[in-house]
Image (cartoon, rainbow, N blue to C red):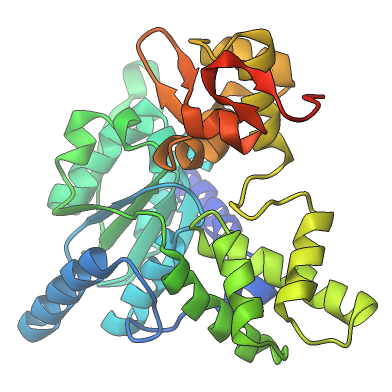
Length: 348
């Protein structure tokens, strides 16, 4: 493959990865700057320090790794960094960068100081990751052109840029890649009070009438996640328009979320299915994640990334070396009186 073919292939890939990563509705709800962003105070303060120093020195922002469960604001923070630095933000994801030519197209089309946001960066292929090392440190990449006796290495100099990586599973990142990020910071689940602020902001942007109790009802059932809160607002708004007077009140929000089978603690149908399975078939565990995934008909990665973090952090499950174990709080969530398994309601 010639150098022109590599760059042409990369340019085509580059243009295909810059499509809007979210729906127009979700993009319209994103905070535009640090002042609009709610929660994650430690992370925001760290980013403010880096942005302020970079602007004062008139230099490029250092590389940043954002980790944490999905829906907590990693993508939003990357766009805020672009706004604060007055630079473009280019968006892609780890799994779609399959070859060195793909990476070359992304990097050579950047401008000085641009931010390259790679979502799910832990899923980037190892062969591409090797090229990323020199790009992050020396702002150059060496591409192998042709094959056999005609093979040769071509060095491509690239503009200085900022890599913002986002991952839901930071433990899967290799040590060499992780060490190249100046800042590694984790986003945690939001408190109900923080989510209440986000719900209020979203309702104002969507021009949906609401009262404080209605907003808090949504916030308390959003599993500590702004993305879930915004999704619930859209459904509750539709419910209020169809089954009520159009205003989000506590009774209206409660009925709407009951229709979605989301209880007062934010547990959904799959959460309770997991808890009931542990209690009824495995006497509270321990049970391996693979066994649970087969039993509920779901991928083990989905259980680990979507359901388990909330259940574990809120004390419904424990993760041990032997497997998952149901806690006293987990029994109570499904109407059972502790580890004795005395039923207070029908399990299935």
